[in-house]
Length: 459
Ligand SMILES: Cc1ncc(COP(=O)(O)O)c(C=O)c1O
Image (cartoon, rainbow, N blue to C red; front, side):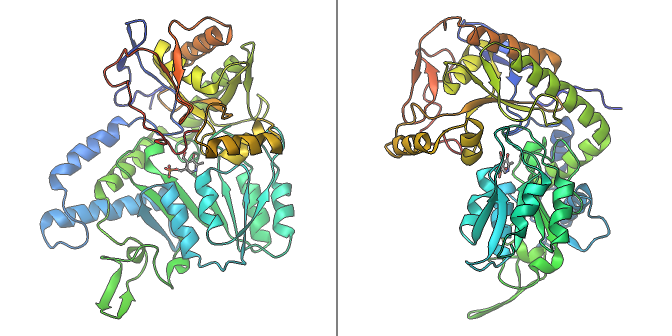
């Protein structure tokens, strides 16, 4: 039986802090990218000596690599609860690519409507804005909505071609009632795509969703593999998202015969190492078992949420504290910029969190209760290249390796900062990114490490 918390590769690494001491790093940015499972590292190392090109080689190593790749595909299908179905798993880079892939492959017409929600990550908003009209399920001020709100939006005309919705919010950790939503959508004959980027490491994927997408790097398996799953027939006709080697049966100079899915959808040399890593993570999570993972998540999530909410001047965004969420907590500190709080946590305490709007701008504007005029002003400033006043929050997110001691260190540090303890050094804000850095270098890689615009969005 797995004991939680389960250490990941690199846990406990000492990082330099501004007072000249080194401290064990506290990784609370798991919702962005998690650490790496020991099992993933081991399997990748075991596999690498037999690494070779997939699908196209007649050599023994190529056959081993092809086997490894195809068994990762099977594992992905079973992870998504699709054994025995005619669904296919397309191995791609990440959730963003998977959703872009789907948006292209559904061959929507510009007048078709896709229903989605204001809670979504940009990766489940922007791909749809290029191919169809959108209608949005609004959220309440606590960042949630009910299955009935989704149903109401689905009932409006014209009838939507698709509902695409997140399985869990990357900002508040909120879990929409996804099974109820899928039922409501299916009763109306509308297929459902679920963005499972956040759900995948924390909860079983919804087996009745028509399409699901997720990323390996958020479930302890870096190396750049993600998955899109959907019914085979959705990919049977039409051009694939990417055209090129491996996706065809026959190419003439002015004609092409595409091969069958899933190969048709995976032009180019597949990422076999990423697939091996993903497979190992799937096996690792299966070995731990969902009940144990969920129990650990709930325990750590409550400590995080209750601990932060109890600090005077700290406001936790999202649903009330009793709601079951992922261990993902976004908060603001009265009178202090989110960027400064995050910079101080890192430089003074060795704690890694995220700050900004977490690639979910519409959701954050609602959670922060900003007026249209305020949003207008911020947009104007950002367009002028000035992110000094950009609104946002700090986000702490946990995983299977998060310990009670990690949470305590965060709570103590945030309480100190929120309580008004002066910073030991001055912090300088870069107006282009909105980020703060200490006014002196204290770690070899610190100075200038961040380029303007280097995150998904600097806000
Ligand atoms: C809910 C959600 N959807 C989609 C994405 C995009 O994932 P990726 O960056 O792996 O493509 C993220 C990433 O943070 C996310 O949290």
